[in-house]
Image (cartoon, rainbow, N blue to C red; front, side, top):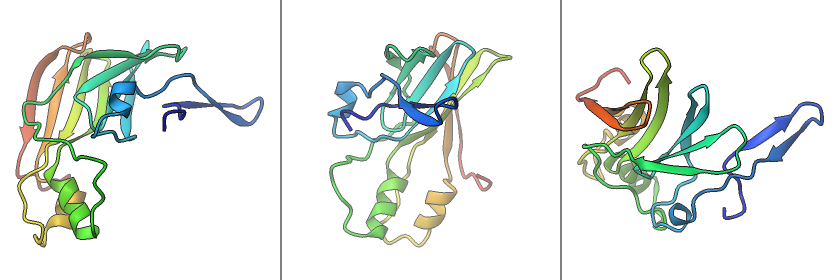
Length: 166
């Protein structure tokens, strides 16, 4: 992963993908929580990146020349990230890990209100043999939304608990 860029672009004149010179931050890449999943949004000027297993948000412009780590944008409902080096022994343990650990699901920009919405799946306490693990993975009961201003300062957070419609 060290030599794999975060983004690729597609050159339609050459009909091929090209690597962008933008890589995962070394500190994140070497952490015990590294996961290559992330979401991103475009705010009209910058690409704002929300890694699934980091409380930080990263920013780049369309030149992809540098990656700026913004200040932390952590949820008040964050529990813990899954340690990625440990392999689950079976599918049941993998589901349990995903359902009981936190991860950031997405980031969205509202150009009318000039705010970002960062979505957290906080995880919840469940027994490994719980028959609802598959449902919890597919339709999490709790979803939190962190609201950030245009400078990525946290201005609020709300959680939807006992959610039946995700």
